[in-house]
Length: 374
Image (cartoon, rainbow, N blue to C red; front, side, top):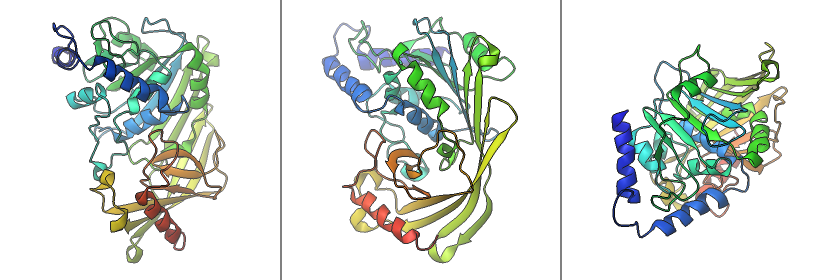
């Protein structure tokens, strides 16, 4: 605990000049830049959910756990910030490293940049900042770190959003454990978002509409659950989404392709009734064309394109037309009876792919070729 706190205090002093006689000459510019990133980047408040799922997919996990992400919303404030509702996000990853803490206290400085070939799906270093759209004081408890951030400029350095502050009292580990449940071991990482009053309904709506297909192209996260805890236990809600192991796996070496099936399952309110849907998956690799290479993907030599064909009735929760994925869904709708997934270059908002990108045009051309074989 002492080393984690000392690390946070060092960041505050060295990067933000807190406790030093001189003032950071770039304080105003830094605050304005991160304000823009946090508030102007996304046209929809709820995009922070996609960013949190993306971050969880990029985390490292112990070999003996099934990577899981739990969203729990409660009608109380455990942070002493005056919120009427709080969203807690539990993730059983290995926990934040010193480098992760450094990264989250910067603008656009990601520990995942340049490592696309290692399987990371995030890259911009700005994803976590999106939580400020719904919470003015996000908290992170992970691997001995107990910190929070404030969108308002700190009185100590006149910079908001990225200045870490150690949490001494509220919430305590006991407060967090009470929400998660005393019968279970607390996951290594908990993100706590005291919600802005005008964002509570939007967050609840997006959580309730989370579609199981969100797990289709994630290689780590195997289970996602959403809980709403009310004072009346009978009014509390629970939904759980899971993805099963691959079956009927086949390889076609002559075209560098694979096919397999995946099973998605969804259960709501613990009533024992589970909906399932099977997806026929086709995955094919294509060599990146020289004329399509871009700096952001300089280490990538192959495009991996997936098509997902739902077999039978799709799961009904939060139904949306199948469209274009870049590991997670974009806002693009194709009206095709299948989903297209590839490592598209996206606008910073994640809402659409960049159509003027040679990288993306190359992927789309290969996608049309893939349809001839699938």
